[in-house]
Image (tube, rainbow, N blue to C red; front, side, top):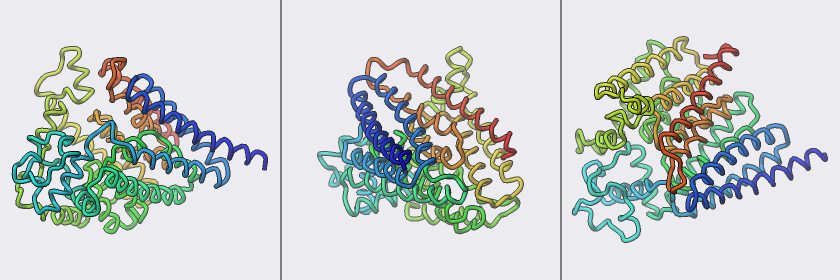
Amino acid sequence: MKAESGAVLAAAGLVLVAFALSGGMILGRATSDLLFYVCAAAQAALAAFGARLAARHSAGVFAILVLGAAVLRLAFVLQTPTLSGDVYRYIWDGRVIGAGFDPYLHVPADPALIALRDSEQYGLIDKRDYAVTIYPPAAEAIFALVTRFSSRVVAMKLAMVLFEAAAVLALFALMRRLGRPPGGLVAYLLHPAPIWEIAGNGHVDAAMLAFLYGAFAIGGASRPFLAAIPMTLGALTKPTGALGLPALWRPIQVALPLFVLAMASCLYLPFAAAGTGLIGFLPRYLEEQGLASGEGVFWLALLGKVGLLRPAMAPAFAALTGLALLALALWTRRRGATDLGSGLRGTALLLVAFLLAITPTFPWYFLAALPMTPLLGFWSPYALATGGFLLYGFQADAPPFFGRWALLMGLAVAGAIRDVTQGARRGET
């Protein structure tokens, strides 16, 4: 009894420290990037410690930590986004659809949409003078639905937190089915990445998480067509979610891919008038982010640092990466296993391989893989999500970007080697 009381007090203290570290990150965002990075790393370590504490003690300890994580999210929902302005585009797209216009055809600055502008948010929309939307149709449907109720930033952020809550419920169910202690979810719940990127910035990745992990929770490969519905919605909310689709497929099965393609076509149908414009801002985005030139991919940028990067390398790297991911997806499904563990491990492998290959410079891309740490014990997703904060730089004390980027990739590669080694010892895919 005394030990349990001590654990409860420790959990309460841990929540208070998490709040203090979040406050340190807020202060660091305004004054010192080094403080921002240190507090982010400390909170990630605290979340891992909290997961061990919750896994070893009573449900009361877990409840305290979950409640603390929920209150922390509410506090961030009420704050103005400080790391990203994407939420303003979400709201704009929703209002555009609600007014009967097509966001794939009209840039925000289009005179035809002048009646939709407001004094608070319109000026905060990024690339409003030349970029149509980049978001897939399921994401656009979410934006339109939320803005039917409210066009306030807090409403969109709250919607994303509710999607995240659905994802957490799915993760809880998956943890139980895998025989892992649900307390391990604290590693996700108190980690600063989802708190800042979902509750703080309102990223639509939260909806993708709900669809992706919800698909596994309702059956995964054992109920492939049913699971393909939320999985496809996830892929058309954030394309990263498509990496979960191979887990539903069985070798030589044709009907399931056709089902997914038919569903995707139906979701795009309301925007068919845009024609080739359905790819939205994607081509220009690839150029702006340095993906077309290779400078936005760490491995190619590394070659550029030593003078070895050539124009043909970027398209060659993209083609080889695509082929490698396809081969990896087929390899993970070579046995056609329908058990939950195989599906999750295959998806985790694809997610981590994809993120390590394209090395995105937007930290919220790493959220898709983060739940694989509590689900499977993988540490490369944790390294990516934690090190992702190094990609932000606002103050003069921030070290050079490439050095921070290299540190992130070094941590992630070390985590991936550890995961592969541990998996090989257990004989896992």
